[in-house]
Length: 218
Length: 218
Image (cartoon, rainbow over all chains, first blue to last red; front, side):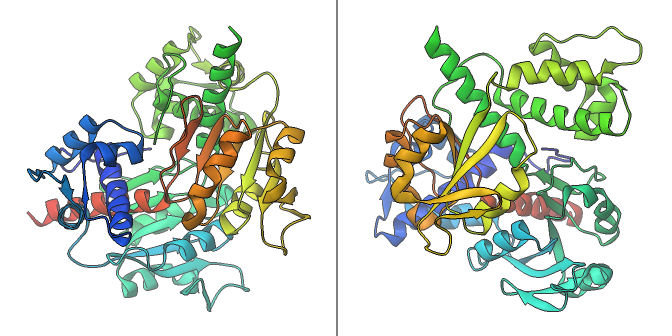
């Protein structure tokens, strides 16, 4: 992961957890659960209640009801922190399996984030609607980013060509990149990049499994 | 992310970076680059040279050559830390778009990690070879995990049914889970779980983009 700027003092991990809390709270509301204790929320996420309370204190949320946090109020509170007032538009570069999976998976899940365009060079994909999103030829990237007011790029091209998109992304005025390729990408300050590499995480899981087995043999 | 145990004192983030360094080093070796300075490696990954040196010190690697780290030696050194002596087998539960994308993407990328079986309930997928891997009915899960000596599960089922796989995964003796669904899952101590949720990361990118734009308006 690479951070080029830290715009305020909420830690990255807290931001991730706020997003996760919100998803859990929405899930609970769906099931008719309106209040949750910090230790309940903590248990669902495999962390301590102290961590949950610390995260919520950081964003200035407190609750003194005996029934725990009011889920609906907390969802709105987290929304005020995480979401922009306006919808933020996202473009997908590379509509292979991963690009399509993510687009299909994401569509309709969040009202304030919207995948509005996709880009590829495959004639089978260009000028078609894929997973509910229009797919344009990458030659039209600059123009369509402007037209759709796209701020974030989800990069799911083959790793071998990942670096060729860095310049066009900078030139188009993109502010954030979620990088699904296995190539770490360098962007100038002011563009937030999140690397989301599957091999790294799988290697990490394998490492902890190996270490645990070694401990058991001792 | 949830960690149920920490088997030694190498931080999680260092493990992630070691995996990333290795990929970069292999990439450099492919291009005929045999030596790298810590600041070169740092630049590629958007971190400081101090961080790189600290990570390598933690695993006991030092280099006193004037040409920087010997890429080949460092790759082997990292391999001794990360990899098991034997191949570790992985099973995929849910062969939808994401399961297929990850399987196709991963196959052949690492010699010590191997996706050897997939599971689904869709008659169109069961008993076929998909992305190079045999896909079995989930009814055969316990038997095939044993037969293929599978240690790690990559869970890419629909989120709505994610929790139904927890019990079978525990019962089958699985040691590590990479969870691609949006549902945090609770496993007992001794099973390492890594949550890999796309919505969380996209929300995080959007948050930092929003904050940066707000700063610029000030």
